[in-house]
Amino acid sequence: MDAELKYCIDQFDGANFAVWARRIESIFVAKNLDKFLSKEADETKENEVSASKKAYALMLSFLSDKVLVSLPDENTCASIFQKLKSTYVRDGAVNQILIRKRLAMLKKKEVPLQEHLYEVNGLVNQLKSCGVKIRDMDIIVYILM
Image 1 (cartoon, rainbow, N blue to C red):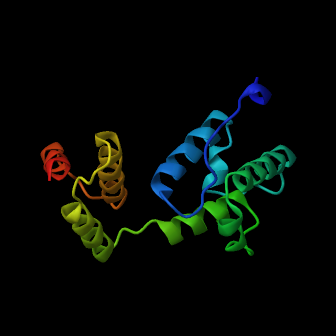
Image 2: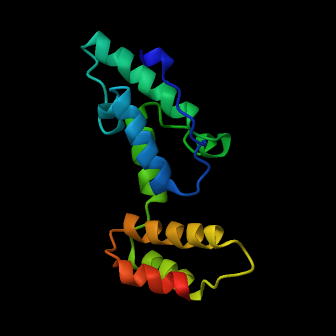
């Protein structure tokens, strides 16, 4: 049955890491490879080494060339995922301030409402990925600005 499952997500190109990582985690859970996102295989167990190699190959297939070139020393799925997290998850105060500023400056342009909502939601999700708790009322205010 596993061979029948196909996953269609864009390769990670450096944008929207939080969304991409969530999808990757769910795919790895579905394929029972999720433990290799956080730990290396036990070299003494042949089946675990084999599964780890599958996880590594799967991870590579979800990375763009631009991102893959930046990971020359990473040779396991866990090391790649940890490196991506340390590079793209920005939970510092400065990043939160910059995202909040972008939200505050965001105005509805001459674009469809759906596109405006998508942009607001993207920024809100970036804030949430930084650990910020944001109330629904705040999101509504950003949408109506």
